[in-house]
Amino acid sequence: MNEQQPEMEKLVNEISVCTKCQLHLSRKKAVPGEGNIKTRILFIGEGPGLNENETGRPFVGQAGNFLNELLGVAGLKRQDVFITNVVKCRPPANRDPMPEELSACAGYLDRQIALIDPLIIVTLGRFSMARYFPLKRISAIHGQGHWVNGKMIVPMFHPAAAPAFCMIFPFCRNTCRQRKIS
Ligand code: SF4
Image (cartoon, rainbow, N blue to C red; front, side, top):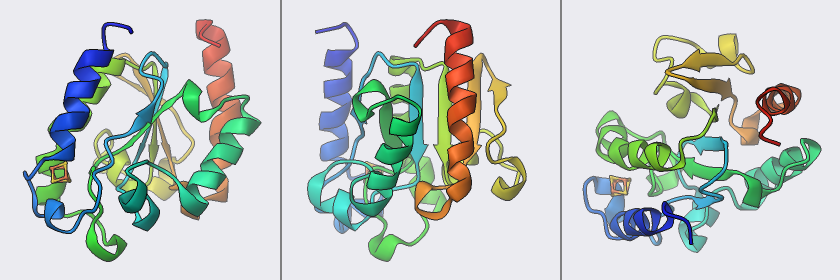
């Protein structure tokens, strides 16, 4: 067990019983995130959907299959990266997360990022992009990496809605090679 593991487990336990926002009222299972906590690549989606709410796992179902496929194109597996969301409980009927829900949940993601300390953060969709580029439109900057506080932030469309998501992979491969992390 590495030194981050106990802290990540503590975080998972907190998220599982969290009542900081109204999304806890309709969840079946919170979805803290999963993957390799020693990875250099973190993916941040929006929020759990129907299948994620049932299983407690991020990016399962159709969008998850697409993500797995595209990770494979880059020579990566899910266990090579960490995948999480900006909100850890499902917004009813897959509506957009509300500002107060994003705000209530932000501390968990902050702690995950501090623990994992990734070099590359791929944001999937508008809400995770807005953590780093609040004034930008995703259609204008998807696939373009920018250094923010020592991390390469790569905004991408959500895989459920984005053939252009594929643009990440050559970029990720090149960055990893340059940094000798893959
Ligand atoms: S979405 Fe986040 S803040 Fe809201 S109840 Fe779930 S874990 Fe807590």
